[in-house]
Structure formats: structure tokens, C-alpha cells
Image (tube, rainbow, N blue to C red; front, side):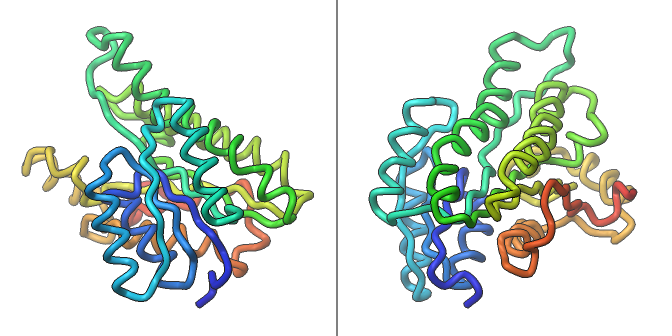
Length: 247
């Protein structure tokens, strides 16, 4: 139980990668603050964790809304007393070529995927600084490293997360707080389920390991970066992409 006594906050915890991260951290002993927009899904996940012997509490937060971030994290801190581990996972897509992309779709993606991470970090960093220990893991994307046609807003937000990761890592390293990112490749989630079968088959051909990743593949990387075993790693982007991008 490597996270016994630790408290983790996971955004976008109601499904996909966020759900897998929450389950993984809880299974290894962390008490988990589950944050997302859907109360029903959060309650189901909290029940799942509780049934397995873990600890979890739910906090309805739309990370596109600053006041919800502030009030939700304040409630989480009041409930658990601290936050040791932050997983900034919440994200959306609003795909379109730049020439046709509406400003509202640009703003929505940047607000949800990037600005929310800055805001959540602001709210939890005081707790980490006081105890001189913390782990912040931002969920970026391979497209934040390579770009992707039709996803200028998404790619920009995920590239921004990498820059935020490195800047924060330098700011808080002296207080024994590490800040890292994971950059998933093609992962089977509800976000990718909407893609055509032809697109998926072509994507697999680009993956040296020959398979699509699972949310658990990403959760394992997040759990490692949150652990004491990763205490000398900060400002790093851990690729979880089956070999799609190397170097």
C-alpha cells in the first residue's frame, strides 16, 4: 500500500483515464477525492472503491468554471485535511480545422484542458508546500508533442500543459514537490470511441507495439510518478504511446 496516508485529487475522474487513475491510487492505499461534472458516475465510482476497501469522496466540479474549482477543492481540503497528489486529467475536444474553428470552441478547450490545471494547482499547492511533499501529474497527449490536423485547440492545450509542468517543476522543487506529465498516445476511451473503425485501424498500424492502449496503461504511469520511487523525477514528460513517438 505505497500511498497509505496520502490523499489524491483526480479531475475528470468519472470515466476513462481519470477513473482508472482513481481506482489505481485507491487500490494502493490513497484516499481519493473524485472530481467531475457527473454526480451519478462519481457516486458509482466512490461505491466501487469503497466496496473494494478503499476510501473516496465525491466533489462535483466543472473545471471550466473557476468558482467551482475553488469551492470544490476547498470542500475536498476540509474533508480530507490535505491533498498530497493532484492528477490534472479533465479534458475535452472540439475538433475542427482552424479556418472553420469557432472562437467558442477554442476557448472551451483551452479553459477545460489548460487553464483548469493552473487553477487547480493554485488551490492545492499551499497544502503541499506546508507539508513539504507533493506530487502533481498533468495528463497531456502525444498531440501536444506532434500536433494534429483538426485539433489545433486540443494540441495547443496539451502542449501548454507540458510547458506548465516544466515551469511548476522549477518553482516548487526545493519543497520536495515534483511536477510531471504523462503523454498518452492512442488510448481506448469514450473520447476515441467516436472515431471511425478505419481511423482506428490506421492508427494501430502506426503503433510499434501493435495495439491500442488502455486507461490502465496510463494509470500505471501516473501511479509511478506519484510514488516515492519517482522522487528524483520532475519536469519530465512520460510517453505512454506504444512507441508512436520516440526520442
